[in-house]
Image (cartoon, rainbow, N blue to C red; front, side, top):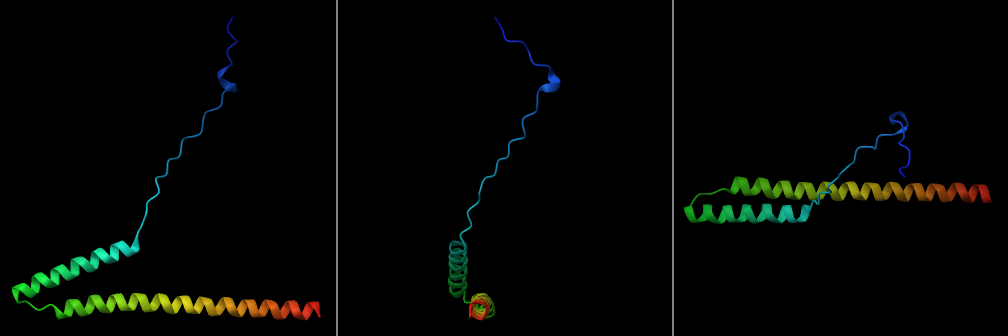
Length: 97
């Protein structure tokens, strides 16, 4: 004996499946590969006798600028968080006293 069939207007559609493949980004590895390529290019240019001091200077300046700006942003955020903590402690002290 078969169960009775359900009419189609009672059936609901299944939601569409969602598939997300996470990507892994390794900034340190990419920087290391970039340095490796830059150094190998410099070595090949040194063997040819060509000078690329301007390119070397630009790339080193770019690396130093990126690292210093991140450091400055991090310290500014730390100072702001410390200020908020001190402010909240002062307000709590005022109300609890």
